[in-house]
Amino acid sequence: MVGWSLRIAASLLLVAAVAALLVNRLGGNARQEEVYADNNISIYLPDSSYVILNKGGRITYDGFGNNRDVHLAGEALFIVRKDTNRPFRVITNTIVATALGTSFNVKSDGEDGSASVSLLSGKVEVTYVSGTKRNRTF
Image (cartoon, rainbow, N blue to C red; front, side, top):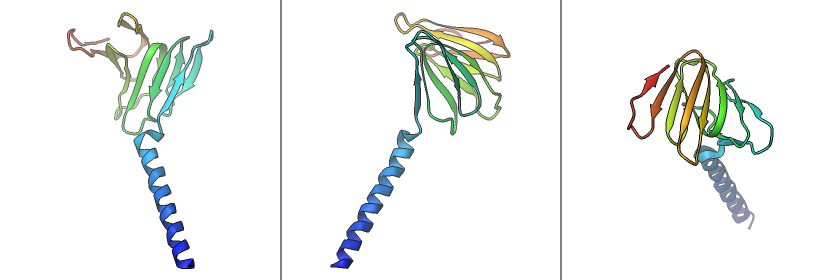
């Protein structure tokens, strides 16, 4: 009787461990910051880059394991920590802004699909998602 109880408990423990591992690997590290208040919010990202997310904005990122991709809806100022092995990318519906150790502002309007990048220092490469326009480096 004790043998069966021990086997069942061990099986349940194994199932729980596998489930926890799958949740962690399939997005358990995903993090999302949203702001819909009257004030901006300051966010330090896992790589020590700094973001000021404006009212109504939203960013999503995955913890920066193999990449430093940030998905943006709205407007945010990015002060990026340089990492030559992992470029920092801000992805909107219409553009991808790749920072090369810099500070810049990205504004994405979800209603009309427009986006703009304002460079404050350093260099940033802007790639159009649709491929209809020429990529530019500023």
